[in-house]
Each structure stands twice: as structure tokens, then as C-alpha cells.
Amino acid sequence: MDILEALILGMVQGLTEFLPISSTGHLLIGRKLFGLEDAGLFLDSMLHFGTLIAVLTVYWREVRSLIRHPLSRISLLIIAGTIPTAAIGLLFQDFFEEISKSGVTAGWEFVATGCLLWWAETYKKHGRKSLEDITIADAVMIGTFQGAAILPAVSRSGLTIAAALFRKINPAAAAYFSFLLSIPSIAGGIVLQSKDLWAASSQHVSFGALAAGTAASAIFGYMAVKWMISLLQKGSLKGFAIYVWIVGTAVILAQLANKF
Image (tube, rainbow, N blue to C red; front, side):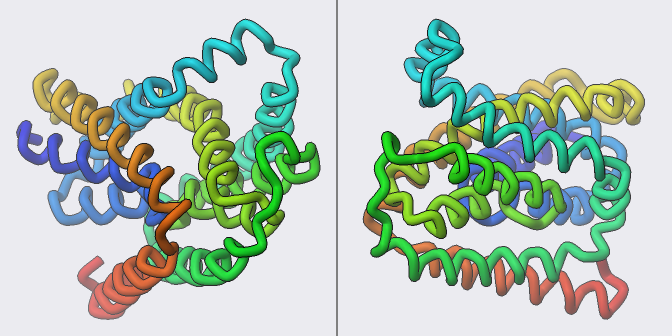
């Protein structure tokens, strides 16, 4: 892997982690295009570390407050949302890993993500709950949707934002809680991937490529979080739905032609 390939993958990871279009699905496509099966898997952990840096940078004040007040209301909501995510991930880890490696369902997962985004858009106008109104039940449902996003081409941010909108949470609070909830999810994913980080063919990834990919992931992840917060309040999710429908259809056609 050269530095340019790592930069491209880092940009893809950073943007697609927080835009509702599936980072894992796009990295899967990127690895297929570059022919980087093992090296790409090795790089995944550091690319996710880059997006963790991005969201921590955006929400550093909130994270500092949560650390200082671990039993605050927001802390308890994040814990409640993280429990179903962790349970799904741990119980079905092997199953999801096999699907992720093969990518056999990726096209249909992109399509399903688009359907949920289109449906969630119709709920935006009904969002009345602010951050202070989010309940434990809301957090558990959002966390359950986040757990389902372990599938490779299902968007984590897309599902958590959609779940929040389904629970009639206003767009600003939906984005805020979705991105805060991503912190333990991304961190947990890095921990689970750590064994693969050293087991994979690390010799195919130079330190320079690794550093470039991680930096690109952090920078573009930061930009994506900022943009998504603004877009969710003023824009529409339907554009993202159309985009993932196109990507999903392309992947399905490529699979039928034995090109993916």
C-alpha cells in the first residue's frame, strides 16, 4: 500500500463514518478496488482510531463533563444505549465477521440503509423531544439500531439518527446523541479489532501510509461531523438515501457479474 491509497481510504473512512452512508461498506469497496484484502483489514483499526479522534475533538467539552460526572443523566443514557450495541456485537461477532469478509450482502445492506433514511426523513417534522426529553427507552432503541449497523454496509450514523427520529427526537438532539453514542461504539470496535491489527499482514502497510490514513480519517471525520450536524437541521436525508441506493445497485450488479 502506498501513501496515496492510504490517504484515499482515510478520507473515505472519515467522511462516511459520520455521513449516513456506511464507512465499513465503503472501505470494503475501497479494499476490493485497490486489491488490499489483508492490508486493508490491518489499516481499518487505525482509520477508525482517526474517526475516534475526530468525534472526541468535536465533543471534547462534553466528554470531559461525562468523565467528571459519570452518573449524570447523559452518561446514563449513553450507557443504556451502549449495552444493546455491545450485546449484539459480542453475541454475533463471528457471524458479522464472516459476512464482512465476504461482502456478499453488502449491496442489499446499502439499499436497506437508503430505505430507512428515506423513511426517517418523513419523521423529522414530528421531532419534538429535546436532549432533556430523551428517555432510557429511547436510548435503548437507538443503541439496538446501532448494534444492527455492525453489518458491513449498514450505516451506524444513519441507523442511530433514524432511530432517534422515529422516537420523535428533534434533528439537533438526534445528531448530538448519535455522535456521542458513537464514541464507546468506535472505541469498542477498535478493541475488538486489535487482535486482527497484529495478526493481519502488517508488512504491507508502511508507517508513513498508516500515519497518512489515520490523519486523513481524523481530519475528514471532523469535517463530516460538523457538516452533518448542520445538514440534519436544515437539509434532507433523501439525498443520502438516493446515493446509497445507487451504490447498492452498483454492488449488486457487480456481484452478479462476478466482479465483486
